[in-house]
Image (cartoon, one colour):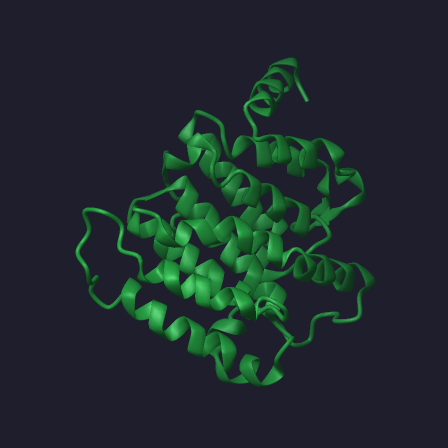
Length: 243
């Protein structure tokens, strides 16, 4: 790391929430893995998520997509990275606009917060895959990336999946307040993350509270959104309690 990169990291670290900073500094990233090897470079990507430069932020999230959750695969570096992302959801930079890094990421304009929530939802879906074989076979969205021939008994993969499943209550606690965000893109992304998280064994008691939040209409918005948020509040508990 160059002197300028070190100075930038120090500046970004100082602006992180305490929980995110402690996780970043307290994790032995070199002992963890992502899709392309050692996780020693993950902290730079994580800190870069809150950089003032939109291109740097976009590249950092692309690095998480390509390395930390490559095609839906989980690695030993995935869980701590996801916990960090959850810890910065309230960061002021979350309000900044996010531009897709890849040519195919050409969706509607959205905030960094919405993009981070979408990524957490992908982590949650990957963590849930394999828990319910019936659901995996009948619901296409639970198996969009996974290869049935992958090494299910690889020790690192087993450890990665276990860590990602264990952290889901913490992720949900970070996501739930955003279910009633005034930003429709944030609400949609929060719902996308909440659904797989609420299928976690032991989180069924959170469903009524989540449904109540989904019924709350942010001030200044119409009482009913076309095809969207109000309807999700009705279907979420049913789907979650009876997958």
